[in-house]
Structures are given as structure tokens and as C-alpha cells.
Length: 354
Ligand code: MRU
Image 1 (cartoon, rainbow, N blue to C red):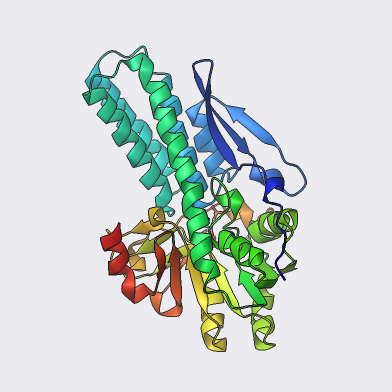
Image 2 (tube, rainbow, N blue to C red):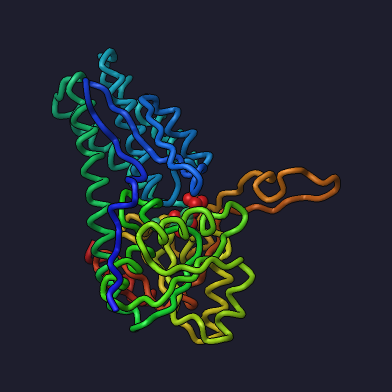
């Protein structure tokens, strides 16, 4: 039976607004969910970098839009600079700082690079400095709107591969919160649910930061998708009982051969799915592909603070806390994109399309 969805209950995770000649980023600080929907507004690009670093804004496409917004905010404040060389050098330094905040999700670099190129193009074409802020803001707003369109296309393409009455496992949060709106992996689930194909979603808790427990289950509950939260170590027993029909996850970077970086723990879920003969799908927009890299071994993996794993240190105990792992292409059934569904071995076709 088709599930009536309440997408209107989801707040926009972030939005760049330009009013009274000022660029502002308004974002939902995800650290406070599910207890509080705290909206924050800033006009300072440094604050945006801080929000990305502490995961106030998180998820590959969302940090891309936030990073691009940081660039727009910086440009908007540069009306006083009159030397073109100073401007482009300073802009590139700011862009490097923004991209360095989180190194794994290539969407951040993708969106920042595009925004920088757009600003430099305006400069080359003689655009007066005082008009650049609003123009670069409009460009970022288009990037954001395009992210939502991609997610809806991913949802439609992915719903076609979801079997009827499906029990679906997901890991981390690749939902509306992680994008401008709608989500990638959860976009597939929303579209399939609207078609009456989803019996239940199982959400991994996602240690150490609990994106599944705090964000995914909250998001699915708002929208009205039947949801069960499990601890990360429970997926194997659910699969063994025949309770999972397919796995759908998001991605932070996908290399030419289909190797996929996503939240730590995804690799383990993919191995479990392979063992139990369960299809494992990755859902991601084209901005997540890094065709410059051949394999996942080349993906930089962000290491995060010890206190995320163990708030109080224990003398003599070291902590290992990579934020992401790489799932090898051979464990992935297909990658769902806004251009269609591709087996990892077919990615050269996607590259041509792009
Ligand atoms: O560290 P996070 O919370 O930003 O990690 C997010 C993920 O790993 C998501 O699965 C990925 O970014 C895809 S979001 C559409």
C-alpha cells in the first residue's frame, strides 16, 4: 500500500539567502537533533567552516552547498578590493581553506571549485565588484536547487530497483538533512514508499556520532516511513533471519572503478549483504564521482577526534576514529544516480554522459 509521505514536515537543512545586500547562510544545526530543531544564521564564512567541521552541517551534498555559500559570503564582503589579482589570489586561498575542512566528501571541492570558477569568470568579464556578491549567491542558489532535482531523479531511478513490500537497511544519514532537500539513499526510500513498495526501514545507529540514531530515524518518522532503529552490530542477525531485502546507502566519493567511500561501517554492511545474497545499492549524484581517481585506495580518509569515540580518555588506551571507509566495487550491486542506475563495471558510460 502506498505510504502518504509528509515531506513538508522536514525543514530545509540549509539555505543561502541574499537580502538587504547581505549574503546569509541559514542552517539547521544537526548536532541538536532530534531534541531541538535549532536554526542558525550567519554572514561570516569562517562560521560556515566551523559548522562543517563540527557536523552542524553534514552529509556530502549539504557540505558542498555550505562550502559554496562560504565562498559567496566571502565574495559579497570584498567590494572594497579593487585589484583583480589580489581578489583571485585571496579567493583561491579561501577556497583551499574551505575544501580542507572535510577531505573525504568530494562534493565539497566540486561545489567550491565551481563557485570559484564562476566568480573568476564574472571578474574576467568586467563585472563590478559591488555586483559580484548577489550574482555568486544566485549561482549557489541554483547549485542548491539542482541538488534537489538530482535527488528526486535518483529517487525515481532507485525506486525502480526496490522490490515490492521491501524491508530496507540503511547506514548513516543520506537523507534530506544531508542534502539541500529530499536526500539520496532516503530519496530512493521516499520514492519507493510513495509507490507502496516499502514495508519498513531498518536504520543502523552509526557509531560513533549516531547519525542513524539521531537523524535518519527522526527524518523517517517525520515523513511517515515505518522505521526500526538497530545497533550497528545487529544487522547480521537481521539479515540471517531474512528480514532485509536490500541495503541502500549514500556516498562521499566514488572512484572510476566504483569503489565507494561512505560513513565508517558501510564496508562491513556490504560484506554482510554479500554473504547473505542481499543487493547492496549506493545512491549518489554525479557531484560525488571522482573520475580522476582510479580506485578507493587513493581516497583521503578523514580522521576525527578521539573524544567522539570515548568522551573521557582512559590512560594507556589509544583511539582509532576514521570517519569513513571504502566499500570495494565488487560488493556493490549498482550505483543509483540522477542519470540512471549503473553497475560499477558500467561507470565509463556514466562518465561519457557527464
Ligand atoms: O560524517 P557525515 O555525517 O557527514 O557522513 C555522511 C555520510 O557518510 C553520508 O552517507 C554521505 O555523506 C552521503 S549524504 C547524501
